Each structure stands twice: as structure tokens, then as C-alpha cells.
Image (spheres, rainbow, N blue to C red):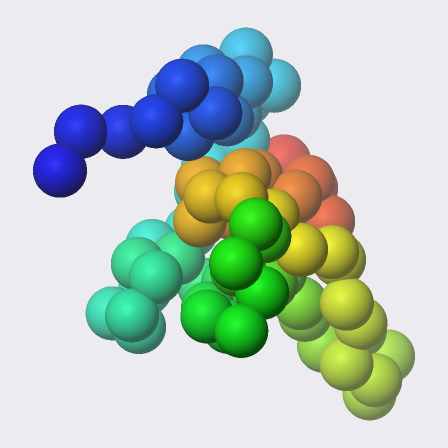
Length: 77
């Protein structure tokens, strides 16, 4: 399945910012990114644990966009 324009932009932006989208063996393919099909327009949810609390980073149209926000929250390697 080809990537959407939004997904391609997110991948290009991660490279421009020097960030790595963290791969995972979950259904979305990215760490910190989960799918909720009840949200049709933005089914991908980015979240991470910070200071012992689960922090929502937002909902996105593509897994790549959510993974970019997750990578930004982690910071550069």
C-alpha cells in the first residue's frame, strides 16, 4: 500500500529534524502509536509514559504523523 502525502511529509520532516521514527512490532509499526478505528478521520493516537504518567500527544490521520510527534517528544538521539 503506497504512503499518503501526509505520511510522506512526516517521514521527510523527521529526516529534516534528525529524528528517528522508532519502529515496533505492534499493529501500527511504530512505538508509542496506537490505532483506534472509532476515530475515522484521525485514528492514530500517540502517547508515552513520562514521570510515571501516561501522556497523550494527540491524534493523527497517519501512523507516520503520530510517530513523528512521538519522536519529537523523545528528542534527538
